[in-house]
View 1 (cartoon, one colour):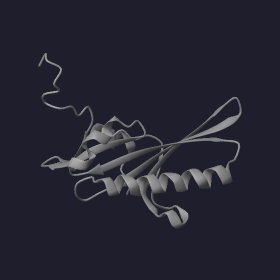
View 2: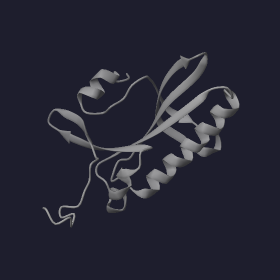
View 3: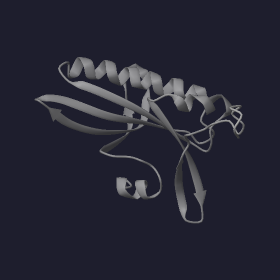
View 4: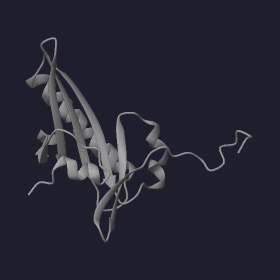
Length: 141
């Protein structure tokens, strides 16, 4: 049974729209989850898609590369299937932690990362953003 979006948001994961899991994206691969919202502006269809890539361990650069490949596949498919529409694809990576090589990628606007936490209450999500150096070297710390 699928977990409702409201329950996931209560646990910290920003997710909206209709969810589909294990989505085959041609030869690009298989996305874990894609959430979609579709609306029209002046008769033009706008597809807001969020691609969720789930990892059992730390989120690494190869996970980002994998998700970017899926994003490109989705964009290519949608441009052929709906040529008059606009397609916006956001990437969300979920894992137990961010690997060191991922820390500075958080300044990129086309994807987000969440840490997946387990405790006695079940699964929770923590948005992994706003990462800065402890001592930024600006002279007023």
